[in-house]
Length: 339
Ligand code: PHE
Image (cartoon, rainbow, N blue to C red; front, side):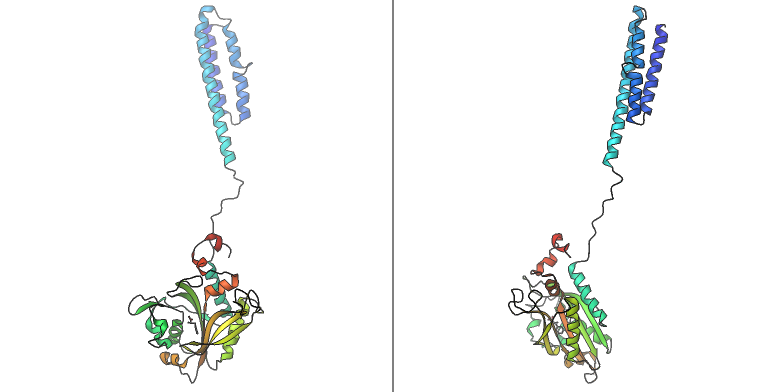
């Protein structure tokens, strides 16, 4: 073989080797190609051996060509090896059999949930749901509810005023008047919503929630009030929950009653939660005062009714055994996720 022929075969071998390395789709195919071209018994070894049969003065040129060709084939092999390795490590990083990453989904806040639960119980008793504004007038919040002008609840100490005429409602009771203004009896409504008072400690928050109830119809008596509230307490807490009514006073109900449930912890035995009394106060209530009917054009000779108002936080705290109202508003997920 002349040196010219040998150089041609060397260049051919280089081109074939580079092509084989590039087209190897797996590590096994690449290794087979390496053995074929660059192995100790491979094509380049044969070609190197063939250099020995050339005349001495032709060897350097052909030898240089052979070294260069083997070098570039070696580099092509290295590049192909790296490409295969990085592809396989990408595959193991991306395990397509793993389930997708779920977006964390939120859920209803415990206050909204308790409000919905309360409303649902009253809906089953025939009440419909109404809503009213949180920014109220003095008229609806106090005047039409028969609050005398010098009543302490009107004081700046308790009420958050927006302007001379407007305030943040201190209870949901203004919705009693708004509802009765809009329709004649029978009315059976519950009104959930936010309420505001200048008050803040372990059991009071400047913003809190109430559910108001109002039923006005022909022949409604105090026994209906007690029956409805018993049905509510047993549905909300447990079927054997006892309630107790204590005489109280509100300007817009007469007679009025504070309603207690038997302590959810000790069931009436007396404990720390109920301060030894066996009872927990859950709401204020009473028969609608005829003076209120005067503001809404209802005939007190024809109709009678009852009203009640409860704090949603209070109900939730009793139901879930919580002792600090501020937990509801701190947005601590460790707390919120428990409900
Ligand atoms: N509005 C009263 C309060 O916030 C509760 C109440 C409502 C009392 C309806 C009687 C009737 O304390």
